[in-house]
Image (cartoon, rainbow, N blue to C red; front, side):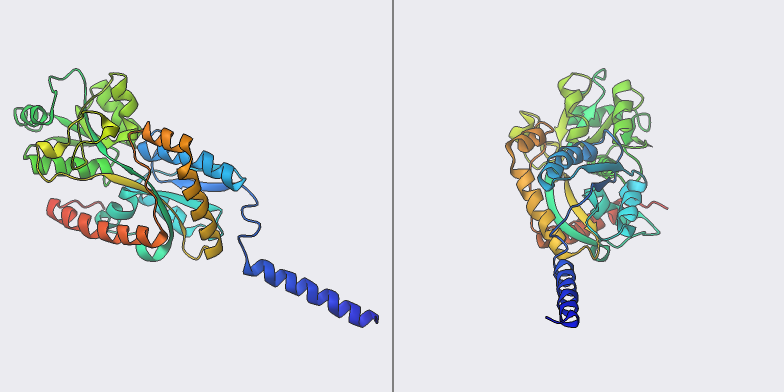
Length: 325
């Protein structure tokens, strides 16, 4: 074979190999650690669940998943960082209800568009909110909380993880539907808001179960209700808030998303790995220990859920008049 012919064949092979690699970006993915942005503070419910998933998902993918907490502005800060990250599969966002279905509705200057700025991967958990009070208070059930607050108009503090957080919205809805008043005290994250109720600085909060369940079991908080429409084995004999306030049904969920334009083969690989992760017995047990249920979805089902929840919460936010500058 002539040298020129040989060179032509070698160049053709190189080009062909490069084209094949470009056609399958997931072939060698991941080749380095992955960042998972968590839109809530360390110790929050979203953080706890995300770390459970990150460890096992990373093991399945063969690379460490590093959790990067970016709380602030009711999850909007972490979402904006995720939006501008390179769409290469090395930045993921653990996005809860507050990030996808609440924050976009209450911020005057919306930093991101849910439907257009992200690639959806899957749900991975559905979490009830737990209504918890300081155990030193003479409050054993939802009606007693209502009566306690009505007898002390404006003197009872409701702690939340910050303006626009899930605990803020669910708390305002609770007081609105229950026709009682509390003073909203926003804290910097779910961990800080729960700690405030433990310390007696605030009297009650309604927040995702993982943030409070261990404290309830330890006797440092008293759980008096949950946000699911009816009782669940996950929470023993804890009554639903709806038993006292009919129609109260505002629980949360967690999902995994990525920046828009992340290659579909990579998204498909992540989706398959996440579903396998959530099927592992040790993961299901760890999630259940946080009073949370494993729930997965297709990307299309997650997108539809977000659109439905935006409509649902949009009506609620408008009725309550929640706005954050």
